[in-house]
Length: 382
Image (tube, rainbow, N blue to C red; front, side, top):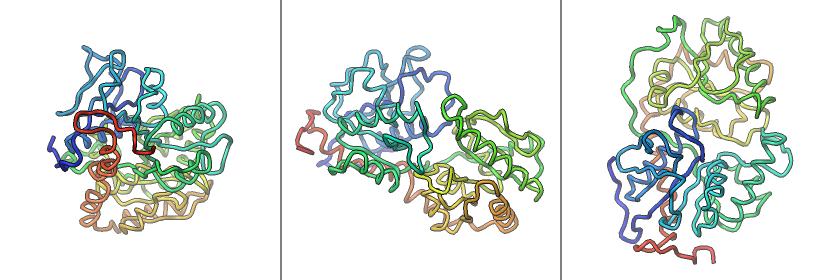
């Protein structure tokens, strides 16, 4: 990997990155948690840091890594060897605690969602799932030296729950600066000849997020029917229970390897982003990826980063109506008929939203983690 320069005042840091304690050897790098884990770690390497991915022992005791990255077994890792421990999502911090690293003096935690100690509008985690996330989040708030959140709604809720003593930063989803050349049209291999509206995202499992999963399936079915009547095929990509999906109007293709997603997006006509309700705290990662490919986007207004569609002028933002998806379908039709020019969009996404741009946000905080010998500094928030 090409290394980006870091200044002499900011010597390289030894960073351990952890996402989960489970075995990743059979998992496809497709879900956003794995993508962020790998891509952010690679971006930190390009900035000159030494980065280890802490993972469960996998095939031959290794996990496939890009050049410059190393994999270390969670069973044998020595947390004191690192200046910084970087956790990814609630699961990463939970895994760190269970592996005995929760007392490290410099933990940088990333949270993909923020929950409260009770159900709140805009946060779609309920019952035991919310309670488990809340328990982890309280420890994140008490143990982390830096906490990265995705957007303003996440920040505002975190401050409501835990206060703000200067440790919070915003680091949204990033995109690849370089992507593969597109392959052959995968939709033709499925017998799809209509223009494709692509929905790429997690629709959740029934055991953990039953209400949200049923809502997504119902809304996707409604949108599928609206699009089908207008001559467009809705294709849904990603994990989640699909037992209520209407296969007559919605084609579900499951998990697609991250390296191949770009081809699916390249050959689609429009990308779709739906909101979870009239109020939504979590951003939608798919918007970044649609735009990075140059794919026009139809997005419902409650999505916090819907502004990217307006900022780039590359799509349409429509009002949210839970059971009426006709406005989304009509906007998709117009984008299929009159596809906007993507020539300015792709460079914009690379310059402002690449993983390298995201990694640069951490640099001042990493500089405070230790001196050139790796000795942790204790004075950043003293």
